[in-house]
Image 1 (cartoon, rainbow, N blue to C red):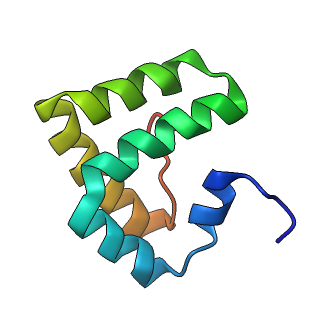
Image 2 (cartoon, one colour):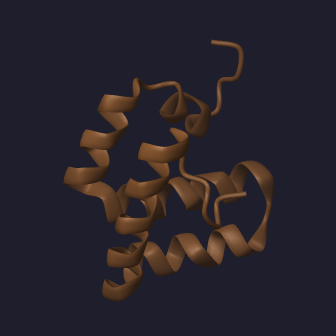
Length: 82
């Protein structure tokens, strides 16, 4: 694997595995993905979105739905995950 980042490892998983992970643990995965992505890119908006997705009920549900849709359509988490 050329890029050894955690998010690159997640993105390299097969599409069906990522969709199943989103269905089972979607909100948590989305939040943690965004927090780790912040560590890699230093984009503050990504950190705030990650914290809201991880620690708030509404943010968790919204992130779960949005991330599931983006995984199905574009094969990666894209919304607020710069």
